[in-house]
Image 1: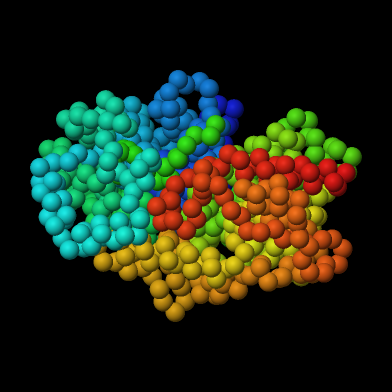
Image 2 (image 1 turned 180 degrees about the vertical axis):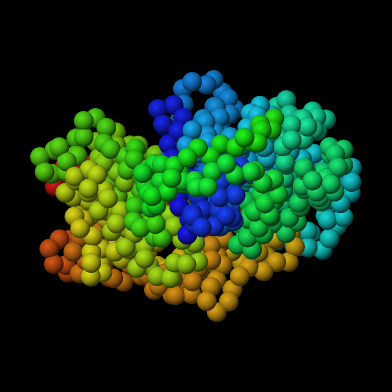
Length: 338
Length: 285
């Protein structure tokens, strides 16, 4: 059993998130050893509210809870159930303030000061940005984040275009009138990354930023799908950024059979397993307390009120120091009615 | 706005209550003639596509003074359970009843209008029709309602098959004795059977003790004036309009695979739903 509770945070508590926590077994050392593990924070993908495309955030959050980890899935201001904040000038600035506020709230409630951000598409973009500026981020999962077409990618793509299935699908799309919608961001093929990430078009600058994250001790998990038009193999990561993925701090996985928003049950299951597996690689932090309470307890909605409430902050919790990009956008906005 | 889980931990559902603005014109403060609005959402990809549209409708309703409650069914959104664990529409009827109770207890409204979007309309009618009913329910407004479960599933399956057919590599989705995957949701066979049996075109609403209106958006005025009375009912009239025909600008394209992940942001329809609710609240007074 897991606990899920609503968490309000940000200015006037106008931002909304759902906190998922593992069930607490006071007799289980396993549980308490994970009390100081980083808390995962899920970011919105496009305009999809906090549950994520095809409810993927909920599924991953519950899988993490089953493995003993806490997570918060949030609505950035103006999305889902969160109100628009007025203390920021741009959408990008708002998003970073929102995430910062979520960290503050979690830290205040749990004492934990390490967080892992998880984002798909635009969520990945925000995860990248917050990882650079907030010392509390000790890990990040970038799903279909920054990618740049390389010469090898173009070659692989050409082979793909010469395949029978590609040609067959192209003809079928035309016959069935299922060609991509012109006016929407649903077709990544025709979009330039610069349209979304002005100033982020240089892969060398992205590589430098990733290097900085590695130097800061952050663990990074890059996940790419077959739905991303600018990447076609895990090996492309090294081609793009000239960084090695030795399976240590940087992990790269390519889900060639998955689409950008993971619309198939099996691909979501594989993604979830991959993230839980990666999460288990966070170094164990010595436990300072024997008991910890769930946030739902501290909010007064938990079930076990007899647990001792103690600060779970870790002495060794040393601060470590997308994009919609290219792929079809999850729930693209056809028009803004507001 | 009050976002909270209700129910026991294993079967909790997420509810979002919006208190009326403007002094609560139609709230419990209004001489016992209070009207609250309960939103019954679609499921699956339609649930995600319509989240903003329903939030927009909610904003308009609260500005007009109505208390509104939105909720997620079990296995949907933030509520507990996996979609594959929902084995019957009855589970969702129960969720809707819990949500209606929550709306009444938070707003003190005496009268509930349910706005059911797509399958939400069928779920609302199902909940109102079964033995337990929905306390305080006075009217159901079907918004682009699913009238025929068989057609609905056929459309969903057709898009699903097309999606798999056009997948870059040959791929299979789950289909076994107990479950079938359709557009990212793993349906239990029993649930599919029940959805398939939905047919609101054939007078299934006969005997339903509440008024049911299906809005026709593009022909709103004419159909609203020409409601047909279908079947005998005990106390009130069950009115069935023609199924919704949307105009091109606000086309939700429910059966077009290209729109599967495109948010539907209708401008006109929420206003028309609001007008329906306002006129209904006025009639009640």
